[in-house]
Length: 277
Image (cartoon, rainbow, N blue to C red; front, side, top):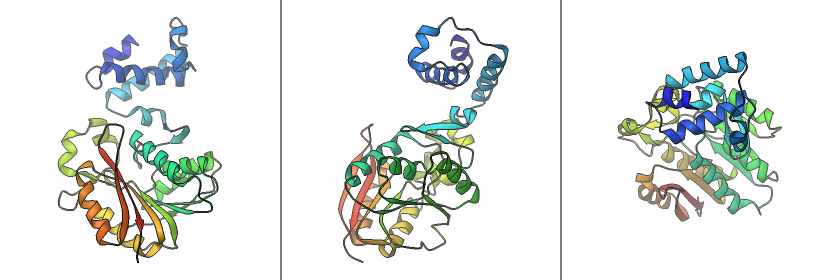
């Protein structure tokens, strides 16, 4: 632990370094985090020590721990991640939990996730609500390939489709459309950690300052055609554009619009219902 604290002190605060190190212990020593204190004197084999040192070396370069290990946890799902997709965030877990609380008593819904990435949203929803049909789209074959690997590892029945929402038309009709599209302004890059700037795909994160609602506008326009009447639209959003997005939804025939705060108290989600075509 002391070695990691010393090596990573310039990149992360002590508590985050501790969390990262416990994750490495869990991966290489098979020591559960809750059992760490009981295994303080447990030694490492030469092979384990080599893997640990290589991991610390990668972390010193700013590489996210999820990329070092090749996976992350999303709720209780272990999902593969790589350079082509955004690492799922805790805020998105909140979005999933909110959707479950709203929709778990429904039957036989068709649910589409636009910009599915790792497929974390439909996979987590399917695990709790297997009665629905799930679809995920993204614009690159490498992303769909990774999403399919995650779906296969979870024995999932979700259908994954390569489609560029900015340039292509959706197919079919859905009861729910969900999206966590790029919403970080380019001017906000300076606030991002280097491990995000250098290792996560910019296409999954950033939009130009001149068009902050670019993806939302396109999705809403297509939702008017491909969302069933009284279908629900769920978005993860930039906290600074909730009111503008609410106004846009109202102008396009959506009602019952709610802006919802995340665990940090920031406006992070918006939901609405299509009331007229």
